[in-house]
Image (cartoon, rainbow over all chains, first blue to last red; front, top):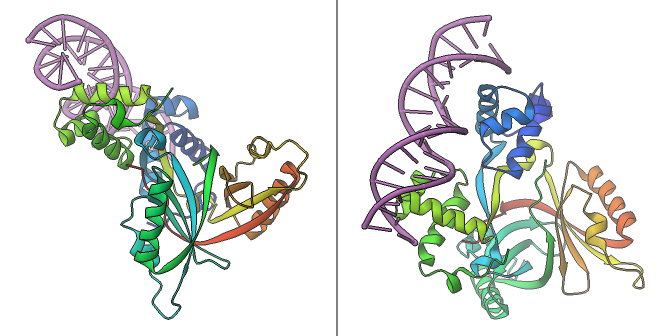
Length: 156
Length: 156
DNA sequence: ACTGAAAGACGTACATT
DNA sequence: AATGTACGTCTTTCAGT
């Protein structure tokens, strides 16, 4: 599904933005609650949320899980660069099975990709870096996170 | 709330992990669905999820919003370093009002903080960088994201 | 597009084991 | 801790505006 800018397609984008903001804050908010917040009927809200889902503006709902509480207190950013420029560069696919990798972006600049990883300990990070280098034939440059002040603030 | 490792506190952490994984995938899953998946009664599942929430393992629920669809197709990582070492270093608080900043971490290495930002355009990025430098009295080093292969994969 | 109403599904609390 | 029941609320659909 296309997922084009709200402003282009929706005549009353303000209501949709309010719904998105409310659902970003509380993904389990009831339609009754949402209806009260935006001043529409439950049916109207339900219809708009369904449309946001179908258009791919809302791609799903998630529980926010505290990583520390599941034994993954350590975060790092890993910049990677292919060693052999001749080889096909399919690092994202080669790394996808490593569940410690939370995010994978290709980037402009001297490095090819930026990974965000979440591990249990420095030892686990060391092991993960070895796995990354082996799986993708890359060099790594790692920046360890000391404190996370905020993270995943919603885009609305 | 404390939020300590599951393994330490829960005798049947496997069930809780399954619940966390299910709720990370679908934060609106009904207790009936969850009960079927883990093979317990609705009441038992409800009780366990409530406990995960109260212990701070689940910190809330969110709609996943497609940033492109709300007019923010561009992502960048911004490393920042204070200009004046004598001044108090409260950059995270000074930057918190900039909603384009999705995440703010302090990091080890030559830079002090790593920000993840989400903007509408290169122009918007340029403006944001000026705001960041002015608000926090820092220099910036920006890495533009070209493609996001995956992002926000759940830690369970 | 929004409203209101009706039917069934779900969330929640409580008594029981 | 887990279960089953019971009640109130919510989701979902549909006819009407």
